[in-house]
Image (tube, rainbow, N blue to C red):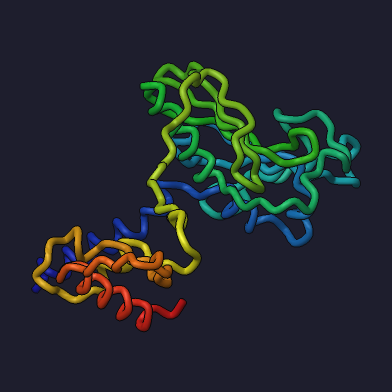
Length: 256
């Protein structure tokens, strides 16, 4: 019984340590900011993520600071530093703020996309640097991929609102996209309007013991033309009469 309790405690301990081991995403770190500061975010930075970093550096535009810079350092779900100096920006203005554009692409999603590009180019990524700031008028992630020595292999720039890739420097090949073929609607074959296709005939015609070619043959019912005087209409064979019967039955069954 004691051994069983120890096993339960060990599992609980491991589960409790999982969030710390894997770190938190950028949007998770933003939730730790003081009220009102999230609306003033200008940049988000992180280094050496594997994939998530130990610390997120969130820079906001602070009108009370001489340089306009306020840096919050978030680690393990809490703010561990708040200062008006940053290694990532000397000054910030309101134009640098990300604004109201939605940040629907979190850092882990952007990192996965970068890994996909690295795998497509047969490259091993050991860690990543993160940077979120405006590219033109829209916020975009720049994910820099590093090797085991900390050297930059390549970088992927992706819009934070849509996930669209703006560039993939260092990665010439793009990852393959799932191109599962979808059935396309089949066009109505040429013929009289409302005429059943061979597939429809095959589904509606009961088993008659005749060859499949007979069972799926389209039948066009046309009015008989008058024969010239003195000319006798040819007598239809048994097969011809049977086809006429099938055609008349289908004409009654089909809704068009």
